[in-house]
Length: 376
Image (cartoon, rainbow, N blue to C red):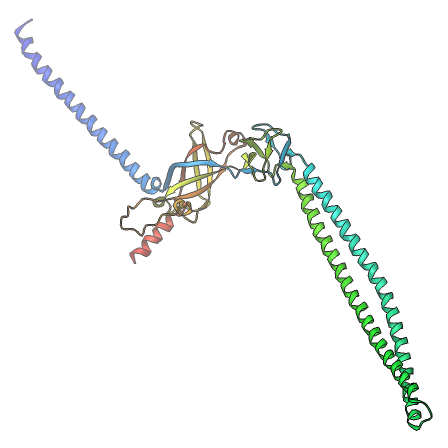
């Protein structure tokens, strides 16, 4: 290689290095410009849209499931459903041996018959008593007639005895007879009063029999309800879950036997932080991501917002009037309705974890108004 070629080689390398540095500089400038544009676009989009999307993963699928429990105690005679079976409203689920409840119903019917017979007997006695009263009144009338006659005889013989036309012995006998007749009148009057009082007593027996009949009919109605309650039916349509009952098992009234889950009426309870609720309103659209269904997005809508935080509805609400206080961000339950196809609903069951994102942009104008009012 000649000396001239050796001299030109360093110059070429310097030129190439300058060109490389220039390209790197322009590439860096382009990257900075792109980053600035992307960052600016992101900032503008966040200010206009992104900050109005509230998200939480403290959310689960829920359903208002119904617990199936008997109203009467007894031995299970038949179980008519199996685990995880779909049922319709009114479908029989369990039958309890009805013989005890039917016996109580028969006993109530017998008590109704006895009470009716007692009332009929008292009514018949009242009819007889009215006849006895008529007889006593007739006897009273006869006694009064005789007493009047005897009193008249005494009045007629008294002047004769005074004049000596009649003996005083005859007058004395007539006076004794008149007093006896007067006593007989008083006795007859007492007998009439006694017979009349007995009518009132018999009428009270009729009322007592009627009341006993009503009580027995009430017992019959209750026993009839218990007879009907020996067959448990599904109050709503859904799927059987957590079934614990078996044939031959003795169950107490109120014992949980199974649950019916209405899978067609699922909803989501999302617990949002109190700082996320300023613009949240019922009716706003919701996007739901189910952990069990990767990549599946389900639409929903805010249905309602709870009237208090979860802590307020706990068994022992917190009392912060103490010396030591630590502020904790509270969460408020928000109910979200699910707007999904029947195919998607079949994949959902209560208890699944979900991530909920609420679009609150519809209320951003309210935020501006609040800020303007606060500025005043």
